[in-house]
Length: 200
Image 1 (tube, one colour):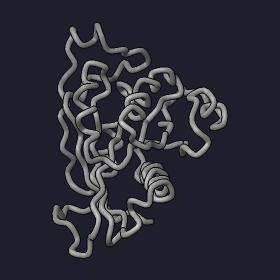
Image 2 (cartoon, helix red, strand yellow):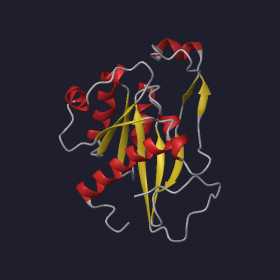
Image 3 (spheres, one colour):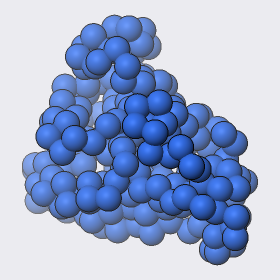
Image 4 (cartoon, one colour):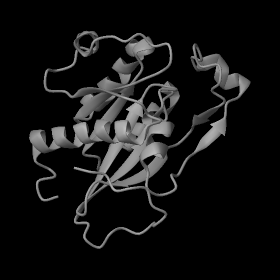
């Protein structure tokens, strides 16, 4: 599968036969908004607000001195993977207080890509737990941050207690090629696991 180049065209190709809803999830400040913005071929919908002093008291900003905004509802983007398949990307807010909101967003989704940060792996467990509770299959992508330790994927898989078949890849949410590969790992997993995209 090869993603289409970015375009200002907001209209779907007439050849598109299948539209798939995917969630981009992860803990607070893991790069979900960046990921959706990097991949979206249309201007992404963002619901970012400036972080307040009150929010700083409950949101863990360790190692994120430059973060000044946060998603309060969702990010939305679109990516055409090929002439027949388009992906609708829904980025969820990462703070625990918004969990109920993005639980509702699982309705109609075929799967999720979990963005994780090796510096804060423990914060991914709640996210994966919610997906498992809703029966939503997922892949995990380790977003590369400056200064993060370069753990082996096998070590991270064991630390996250992932099933052998759950895809685990590295990505840079700022890089279109890297992010596309991460998303394709999820799509291929869904194909092999459920056959939901068999007509795409």
